[in-house]
Image (cartoon, rainbow, N blue to C red; front, side, top):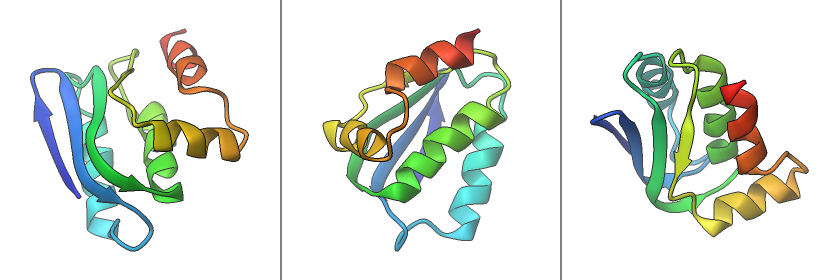
Length: 99
């Protein structure tokens, strides 16, 4: 899994799974989410995801300090996972993070 901040967007690329997400990756993700310039999370580069990806999304909401986090290019597979776990839709998560 690779992570980079481009403009005001934290972009994730690669596989985001229990097998690939290391403790160091998670710590780095938390640190990046805490950057005040991060206002969006782009998942367009995610090629495979499981519950670890859902955990990252929830962590992003909790750790983001900008006050409003937008989801960008969320793969259908991640939306399906959120529904399987009976979580609010990503749009509802986004609204909750804004207010």
